Image (tube, rainbow, N blue to C red):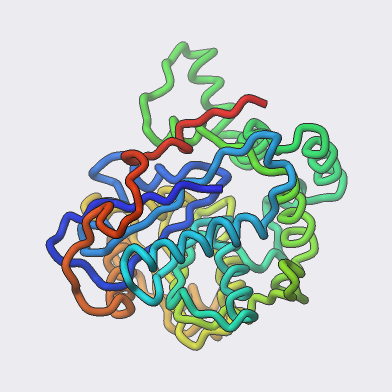
Length: 364
């Protein structure tokens, strides 16, 4: 299901508690590590954290029957256990981005049902757990559309990345379809050499079973937020998420609208919550290094307010949210210990980053 990447330290000491990042398997993890000057991964390591990042398998048709339970059991829980073994820490700080944040919340609910506490804090990047307002995705979540997807994955075993790419492009057709067509075909302009555009075109497939679980049970039925989502013999609820959490949403996000993200955080059971609203969109609002001094962010400690009230009373801060989050994370990461050396724990080094799964292109 995954490769687990451990990044070499750049400081002599590190915080005892490691950070484990779960990126979405709709795309590849390296959007967080495109260049040294905008790498969130490099920045976290430079702050003195032992960092692990999951690189998900790009599935072929043999993964047709893999579901959310496989991602949780053989991905999330396995990665957390290995990170604990390597570092000797009893718990980890977990981060989930987009659909990986949604699944992190399912994992936390499952762990509560099992009375296990290997994760001591959670950070959610552009994460939805409440799908009551489907926004711009409404047309793509109607039965006729989902029925067609279900027929396609039954035949192919996976949802091909080309369908995901087209769906996201349709949401911003002017910017992602018609604008490039005009510049290329009508004006003869070559597309810019832009790292984010390369990553955007380097998509992954999705297992058929997981795709249907996500679309039917989470998006259409909204069971996790409104009733309970049955998985792995348990009835999971968003209110079960009761550990310290920090959620970052993005003001112009057309994939995970910030207002919906906020409502989901409100329903979580934690008494220790921080919600940050970054300027810009789904990617640029997250990949926003402090040295660029580009996009600011909003904070408001009162999460009892509705979305309008929260935004009206929020304080605006210039610059990236990264340092604010790191300050929150630091207070939950324990004392400093000597930096861990890769391989010293007995786990064999399999390859250098970015690993092997991220460069695979399975044939369908």
